[in-house]
Image (cartoon, rainbow, N blue to C red; front, side, top):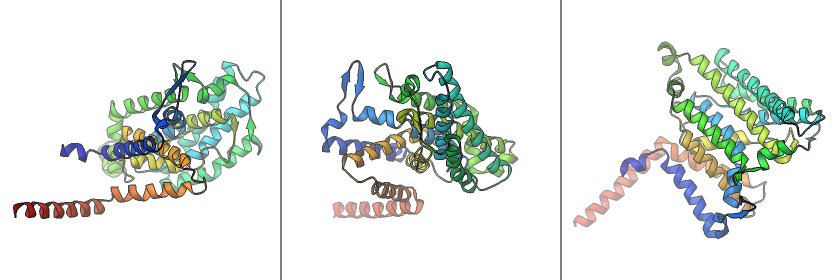
Length: 343
């Protein structure tokens, strides 16, 4: 039993369950699911659909953080991906054509893959600090997206493109299936091959890994490339949801939500050990928290305060000094109770 409580996923699961209970008590309809025309609707289904872009970004962020890095450019890359894809669709004479859709998605994702590889080059080859290397593209990325769209919000009408975020497949949102595929692929690659162990070794001690024969430079480079790739797919889903390329609003602050989801899931910002399952739980926790804030009628301008409070709590819980102090207090209280019973 003690081992269970010490597991890294206990706190993330407890936080998610607590949020679900609070929502269920305050509004019993939160867990209700209705069926219309063979499709499922409800607050829980909305969370599954709306969490898809954050899920993709957080998975990439998990791998980057595992290498002792950080990627602040994911939000800007989402804007670039959406801008590229919608510009191609807008300029096409057949926006509903599968060929047009495929070219638009491929172009948008390829662009962000290249930018992600650029981040990896700055960090792994030139040795620039990750927060500085990705900050450059965080600032420049939205400018690039504005150049692509000509400074305007590009809107399109494309049924297959709209389907990716708003469509349903077998009763569930198609975006949810995109999340499941991404989670499965990342988990298989990182946990069923040696790559996950090598990624953790690079994050724990890059120099020791290099001396042991691990190509740490290539692993770090690849981590940022994957982060850019997943951010590109997230940008496709986001632009598909609003059917517009908004360079300023696309992926705004999502890098902070992704980092919070990864940390909530038990992955340390110091690198090394990481948890894909924890990140998934962290994403659902954040999306549920956002749903709760909206239900409570909290103004959007004030909602970051609640997110900041969550960050503070998470940091305190993960602090070794706080944990040690709490253990000492608990041991003292337990010993007093035992002494009182003995009397």
